[in-house]
Image (tube, rainbow, N blue to C red):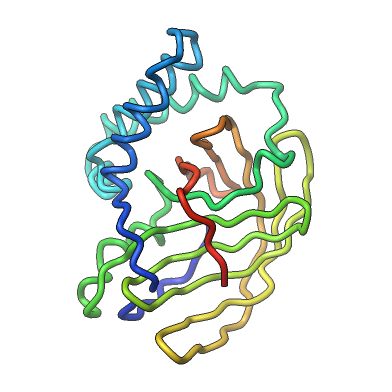
Length: 214
């Protein structure tokens, strides 16, 4: 989920913190599941990323990173051969954890600019072939990058950035597009999705309890 390092002091104030949402997924998603390989791998992954501050703590803990990647590999093995680029991919996805340095830099340093990074989202519509990468800055700011997408295989989606917008309360500033790439959804269910991208970064997201709109 590529972004640029741009900040502003505000976006709609979504009160769902990643740490709370990770715990909620861990509690609710597995209550009625048997200990299948998928359930066990999912439980382990969510347990490992809980408390990692969306990946900030993992940056300085190679041992934890290795354990998380191993858990991701276990879920990828479960999802091997499945189709993850159909309509199940269409959703507002909220970031729980990532290795992407640009995203983590923004999360870590946003307070310097008088704000704090809120929800970080991927908004995907397979039918319309669109993807928005979104970083929110409560209460009124948002930076988002629009992309066109094309399903390339059962698990891979190609994307091409088309435009970017920096928006505050009552104003917005357009920015030029800046690249292309692909990502693979290694595992997807009705609650979470696990992603690996062209730069070999990893991303774990959950289905947000709201739909983000421009």
